[in-house]
Length: 233
Image 1 (cartoon, rainbow, N blue to C red):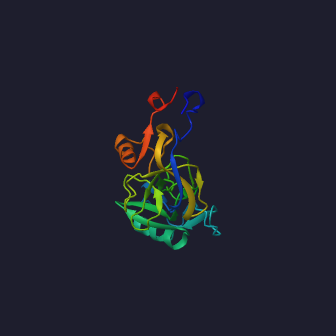
Image 2: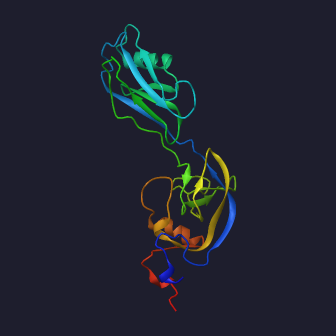
Image 3: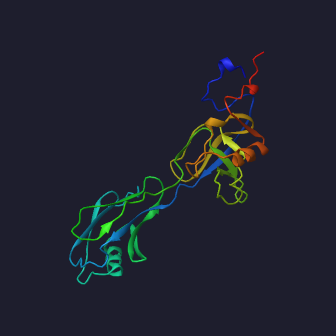
């Protein structure tokens, strides 16, 4: 490749090999949650807890503030969790080491739970939003082949069924509207710009071990400062 015509944001760096295959996404991810930090044994009889669950389910309560009114004799974490379960929708309340934990029924990116301004004295920590693989996978996403289904999926360092083995690279961005399969063009061999590669399992940088695995599968990640890959003749 001529250095003069190379764009640093390009993925392919030469005459790579491509093919089309089915790529599978599982967008369920993890649920959102929020945990109480104090006040679990305060007397909250007849007082209220307000919270909002947003999970894209389309249910009547999706994105709408809900109100739980604690019954008489609500001065233990177990009693408060029971009241939340009896009256709340789209959630499940449990008790962990004396604290009340509210978890959404659904998981994935965009799933949230927020505590409103009720009259109960129990204090809540910072809510944790749901997680999951993005519905849009960027160009350069590392892919593995599921040894069970034989379909391609996003590489994950903790993946099972050989999805922890990066074999291919997504040649173009791919958008999923729901979990399932989409046909995509993948890079199966050649040189790729290392700085444009990405993985979906977490936000940490791609380490040397992962890059070495990709090389072993016939795709060579190259730093753009490595001018040895260019043909300037």
